[in-house]
Length: 346
Image (cartoon, rainbow, N blue to C red; front, side):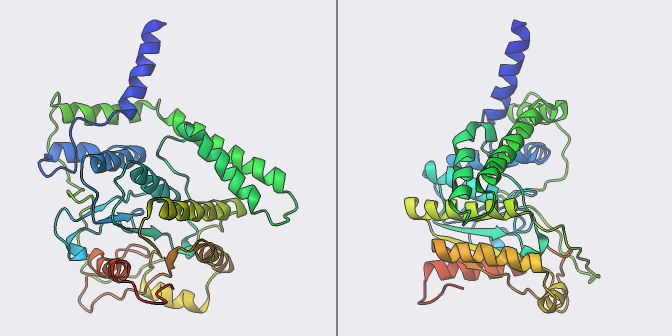
């Protein structure tokens, strides 16, 4: 029995302890970077956070998911070490806000933070992976409280508030149970063994650069891109997005952060089609999020239209812009923050 207890304690130590080596250090070898790339989503988020703890605050930080993670310092016209890409594929706006909050509390928030919010037509929603949900019970309770405060005479404010609390607890428990997956344990052990030098792996595909971005091969052949609308977000999911905007506003006020939120772009041919026939649920999500941005005084921007050059690089698919062109747009947001103009809010 005592051996089993020690094993469980050891597993939790494995998940919460920082790695002895930083995969984003310029001296990190191919094996370490490859092993980091095999970690689950929560490991990627935590790894980027721990990197920031051991580095002076960056001038610019990018937050989001796969739609911005490929943007590196060269795409922004910046020097190595000036910026860091904190985005992690598969995460949502809620995770971006949670990560920025932890960086701010640690005194490591970037001077300028650019956050990618998924285009409303995607109707993408996801809970935060990190910090581990069960360690943030008070945050779950606060989410329910924020929801209740904005019921505006809904028919079932108490029932819906309890439901949002229940959903959050269930998600937290599901994330916690994943810690006991043998596959997840194997990946963490592999990463730590490579980081400590106890195991050697054959060099694999290096996906990450030292600025936190991922390598992306340019698409030089134009192809037809498809877009299929997802199921409309529930009222609860939209309320979670609004809660995240309120939380972000609190961070801006409490820590004096400089933040711009922008909707991620979609391929121009799809954008032109949707401009004439935007879905009602996408319009509703955009209206709710932008109204909350205005109410909270946040700088939130509509999705840009990014046309590829005549000879490429082209869009990889419906929702991932070429990093160089997306980087140029993000650079305009950074300049807006550094050199504000009257009535710059869009």
